[in-house]
Length: 343
Image (cartoon, rainbow, N blue to C red; front, top):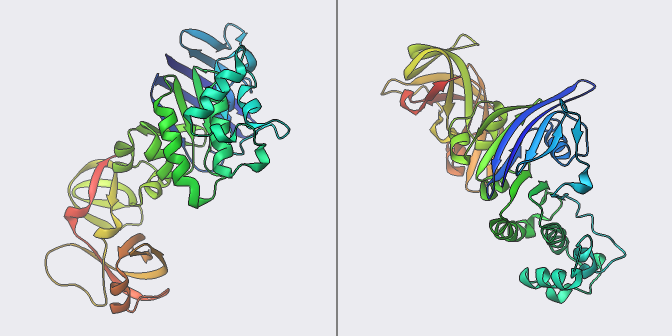
C-alpha cells in the first residue's frame, strides 16, 4: 500500500500546495503552527474538500482534477479519527464499533474491543467512558473498517495530561499493527516523535521541512522547528570563520562557509556571567534577561541583546547570578558550539 498525493487548493487568502509520498506501514506526523493547513490537508485527502491535483491510494486514483475524477468520501478506504472522539451518544460502545461494518459486525466489533482490553465496556454508553477510553473506542471503530489510509487529527489533544501518555502508548501499539498508510496531525512534538517515522513540517500551506525526527530537529529550517527542537536558530551570511547576522553582529563559527547559512546554538551552550569572561576566544556580548521559565531541573532564560537567544541554566546558577527579569548579564558561546549548515 502507498499514497501519492499532490494537493493544491485556495481559500480566500490561504493557499495549500503539498506533495506527499507515504509508504504502507509508515507513520507521518504533520506539524505546523496554527493556520498552516494541517487539518485542511487531512480533509483534502479524505475527499471532504475539492482540490486541484491528484491523489492515488494503492493504485486507485481518488482525485484527479485534470481528468475530472473524484471519488466521494464514503467510497474511499479512508478512516478518520478526530480529536473530540465523535462517538454516537445514543449507541453502546459495541454498537459504535460495529457501525459501518458490512457483515458479522457484532462479532468483529467484540473481537476488536477484546484485543484492546475494552471488552468489559462493550455495553457501556459513551458518557460512561473516560476521555482516554472514548478516544481508544473511536480509534478501534475506525480500524475495524480496515481502511487503507488512516488519518488522525490531533487524537490526543482533548485528553487530560495525566492520561495522555497512557493513551499515546496504546495508540502506538495500535498503529504498529495497522498495515496501511498513517498520517497524524499534531501540535505536540513529544507525540510526533513518539509515534512518527517521519515528520512533515507545514507552514503557510507549504512543506518547509521533512525527514526523520532526528534529522528535522538536528537541522531546523524555521523558527517553528527550532522551537520544536528547543534550540536557538540564527540565519546569516557565512564568511569563512564567522557568520554575519542581519543585525550586523559577527558570530564566530569554524567552517561557517560562504553564502546563506543557518546556525544552531543549543541553550545549554549559552553561558551567562556577571562580568566579562576571560579565557579562550569565544562569542561574547552584553545581554538582558527578559524572562525566566522553570522547566524540570533547568531554567530557560530568554535574552535580548546583540544576539537574542535562549539560555538554559540550573536553578543554582540563577541564584548565583542574581537572575531575574531585567537583569544585565554577559553572554558567551564558544565558537565550536555553533552548528552551521546551508540555508
